[in-house]
Length: 335
Image (cartoon, rainbow, N blue to C red; front, side):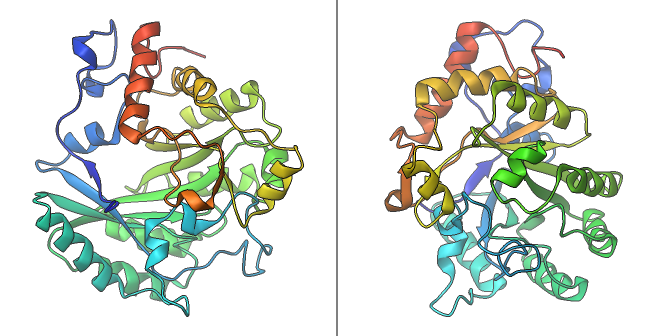
């Protein structure tokens, strides 16, 4: 897999089904896909690919805590993390971008590119160092913007002002890892920040021309359906632009794996997850683009559970089929 993600023109038609009162900006899907979002802003398809800038995380290096979040083992989720060599130094940003773009063109993909700074916390440096890295990523004429994965406790106002400057000329996303609005859950998974810190970061990011995406995880230990609905409803009111929804994975080399083997953590079956996801999307504001509908593990040898073994295209088809079955769509349920 080349891990280039296409977000451009074109979409499936759900068998020609028509949903009454479905927002027209959804196109032909029962949710506001990122592909659809970008097709309304760019004339060419846009590909998003990850790069590794060599960042760490304050929840690992001791500034906040050690060991990271209980579920986190980055090489299992980020294709860019595997670029690092034996001394944990990644290739240069420019080298990574050139390699990705050359591969895309070799595969006859025509379009532009978003560079996704993905592994760990990609604003966890001085503004001067960040500017050097971001400038490097934007040198290529085929790059149209940046996506910056980070934590809400790693964006002071100087960093936000730096990113705001890029947003004047480029398509820029700041992707905040939140996972849940509930402090009892954040503490349970050793997240290392509070919901109040997230609210503060969102308040300071809004109004700067930066698109805001929020990552959440469904099925976190101890969370109920009401907890997850509360997260979706709250985010719908916060003026964010995008969301990435993951389901809980149990990975090797994580504290969560120990909890799982002790019987303290349960994971969704695929039969449980798809209707639950659709339930939650019905509460999500139709103005928020959905960048991800479920998590993916890149190396099966690192995954303990759940092992669905269903290809991505079949997962997406099953989600659309569930919406079709219930004659519903994102944002259809108010409240």
